[in-house]
Image 1: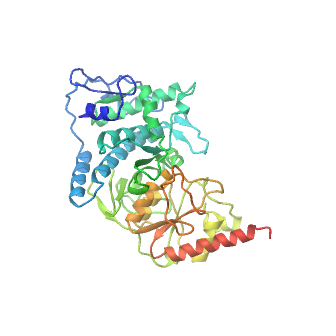
Image 2: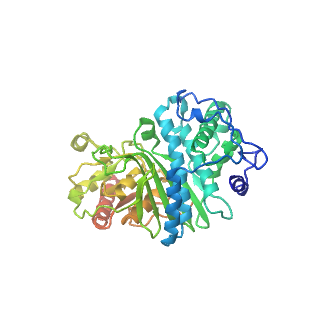
Image 3: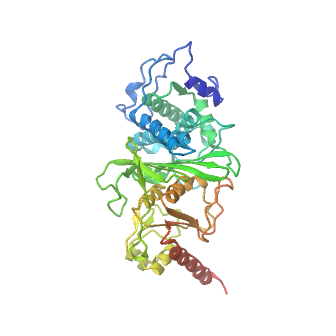
Length: 444
C-alpha cells in the first residue's frame, strides 16, 4: 500500500522519495547524526537494520486510536473524518521530530528569515513529514495542494549543503523510528517535499494550510509552540488541528502559560459542524471542549504573547509598571475601556487559540504593526478550533476571517477572538479605541 500511495503522489525513486517494492528490499540509510543531536539520541538505534518490503509495521496505539476515531466520526456524520484522522497523524509525527530537536537544538540549526522569525531544521522537517503523511493517508483528490510557510529557496543556495543533509537525516530517522512507512528521502526529495507547500490557495478546490512550527521563538526558548494544520474547502476552513507538545492537557495553571502538573502534550482538533476536542499527543480519548462562559469583562483574562515583535507595544513607563505587559497601546485602551482587572495569560503561538477554546482565558486580541500582512497559516487552524468550541473570531469590524484570498488575510486592523457573550462589548471597545487613536494621530 505504501508503494501504491507514493505512486499516487508522483514521487519517483530517482527524483524524491524511495519506497519499497515487491521485488527489492529496502535498507534505511546509515545516517550521520546531525551535529545538534547527541550521539545517544533515541532515534539512532533504529537506523541499522535492513527492512524487507514485507517487514511488519505494527501501528502504534496512538495511530490505531486515530483510525478508530475516524471510523466513529464517519458513523457520527462527520464528512471530513478521514481527512481529520490524516491531519492528526501528520501533526503528531511532526511533533515527535520537533520535540527531539527542541531538546537538543543549538544555534547551528537556525537560519534567519526576512520577517525576523527564526527557522530551524525542525521547521523544514515538520513541513516535510506533514506533507508525507497527508499524501499517504488523506483521501486522494485531483491534485495535492498545500499552502505552507516554508520553501526550499534558501536550502538550494550555495553553502546550505550541511543544513540540507541534517534535515534529510533527521526526517529519515523520524520515519524509521515511527515504523509506519517503508520510505526514505533523498536530498532532492527533501527539497521537492518542502516545495509541496508553495500553493497559493484560493476560493476553489481543497487546500491544506500549514504552519510547521508556529511560535518559533518560543520553540527555541523551550516554551510553547504549535504545529498548525487546517483544510480549506472552496475557500472555507472546514478542519483544523493544533499539536501543542508543551501545553498541559489540563487548564493552564499560572500566568506564564505553564503546566499545572497535568500530562503535557495537547492535540486540539475541530471539524466544521462537529465541535472541538482535545486529546493527548501520546494518545487518549478525545474530550469535547468549549470556550469560557464569562460575561463580565472585569473577570475576563487576555491572552498575550511573550514575543512582542508582532504587537503594537509603544507602552509608557507607567502602563508597563502596572501590568508589565507586552500588549500594545490600542489593546491596553480596550483593556481599560472594558474594566479588565484579571492579569494577562502569557503564551506563545496558536496554542493561545487552543487554550482559549477550552476556557483557559477569555479574550485574544492581535494588532500587528502597520504594514504587516497576516498569513493564513497563522490563524486557519486556531480559528476553527475556537469557533467550533462556541467562540467567535473576527476582524476589528466584526467580519469573519476570509481565508479564500490566497496566502494572506485581508483584515480591518486586527483579529479578535472571544466568546459570544463578550464579543459585543469587546468589539465596541476595540472600535472606540481605534477611532480615538486615529483622531489623536490626525494632524487636524
